[in-house]
Image 1 (cartoon, rainbow, N blue to C red):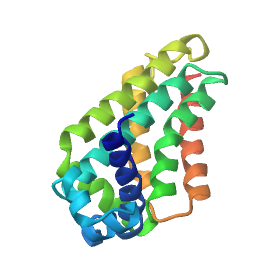
Image 2: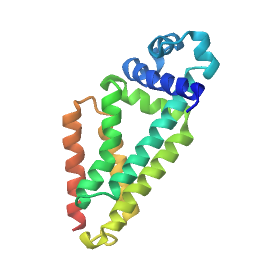
Image 3: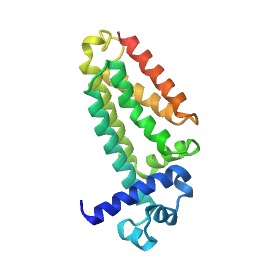
Length: 189
């Protein structure tokens, strides 16, 4: 990895912490520069503004989450466990890196500043969950009769979006997500 690329990754790591702590609106280039341990001019050498940093940070996070979700989807465990873990990554990321009071704002900002990333993330995440469901077709005899794999995946992700916006502790959100997955899988068995 080049020194420039390393510095960009350092800036994105710092930006995630700052955006997560202060929300998008209260975050400034100065706060990001301080957190990254660089001067503002050095920060501007890599990014033109906080919108560009935010987009780059979101793009990197999405790629990492989808890669990991796909690995989980083909891993060990029963279908409910694999689906839960593939969905929980997003919840854990949001609740673990964004203060509860700013979760809704951050999700709204991503959809405004990077609607293409929001659509891509949703489509890619739906495809991962759908593939887990299709791979477990033998365990889910009602799949297709009650819901298609695609519809089930979209329903789960839409529900996850609602769960993720709640201002609750991660343990509460985790329980709600598990209950959602459990009910969905049981309705297909």
